[in-house]
Length: 246
Image 1 (spheres, helix red, strand yellow):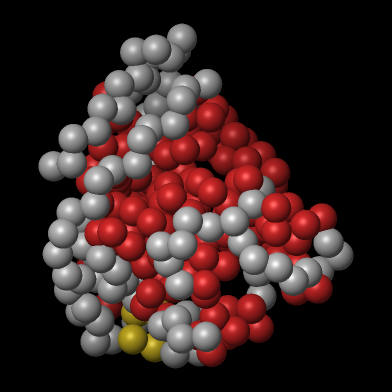
Image 2 (spheres, one colour):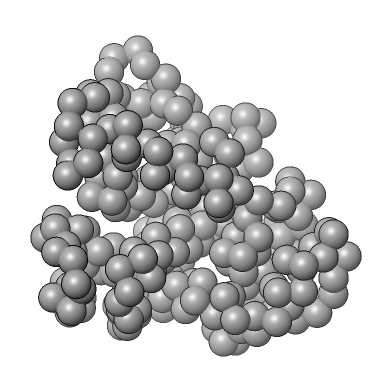
């Protein structure tokens, strides 16, 4: 286990221990070799996620009528290839205006769909944990130290093309893998990372603590300090502010 603290005692409000434990597991996963990226590359993805917030090119793109009209170089640490840097910065700062044309341009520069999905998973995890700290008025947790080793490079067998920008696992077989009721299709919001199953499990682990488990989503009794309607009101407002219209 990567030694990180995630001690939330400085917070003026109490923080559930399962949240702290989930954040520790998230940092541990980031540090370890993944499916297509090394531990060093995964930590570098998390670092770029944070750097994007102060990137001058990202600021100019965000202000432009079209981000594709702006040329320049991202403020980056030099540890990742240019397509992955652009992916991370664009997802972090201007996700609402991503396009399939932009995604295809990353592939044309040498990035694989598998690398894209894994980097996306790490980026989303980092944003999520950091956003919690911002909301609680806490300093960001230091990024973990990378663990040596090689990626597993295992690709799922039941992959389908054409349903989304990235390849996805077959809906019903994937639903069985993640424990959905028999015969139920897996929603796209869950399948989005299914080309790299470890990233689905990472997202799910964090989501169970910060939102609800898959089982709790189907139940509407009170399971948190606030009731379900209040949870969804907050979730909907955050989605709208982030221009996420799912």
